[in-house]
Length: 164
Image 1 (cartoon, rainbow, N blue to C red):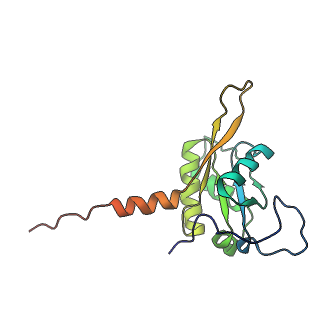
Image 2 (image 1 turned 180 degrees about the horizontal axis):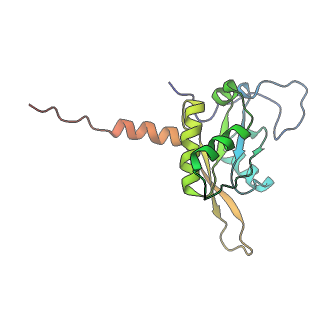
Image 3 (image 1 turned 90 degrees about the horizontal axis):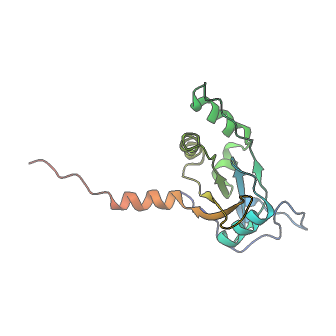
């Protein structure tokens, strides 16, 4: 059984990399750790994430994402995932949110790579342009529960009729 996309509260005094009297491991706290492969996650966006998830942002892992369109994307995505610097245990236990790259081909390959490392689909941050603001700014639209979507789709799958 895959872990839930968000850990249940309550625990932990820390948030956004702040120091605390006593530090619990991230998987034992009420926090999330976004891995950002997209536009910068500003303080406003982090506040939106905290409101949506009901959890504090522990730390943000920023991964600059520039793919060479002249090379196959698969190996480049492996390099991106490796550059996050997490151990095998951390991939499988940390409460991770992913802000995928805006380029759709890169995003789908990255999600396949992360599923292989994590054992489940990570929840993903969806950004959208904020309305009525010039110059354009982005805001957090929602956190997509990819594993929940997958599980619901499996439940809707109809068994194939048996030939007689």
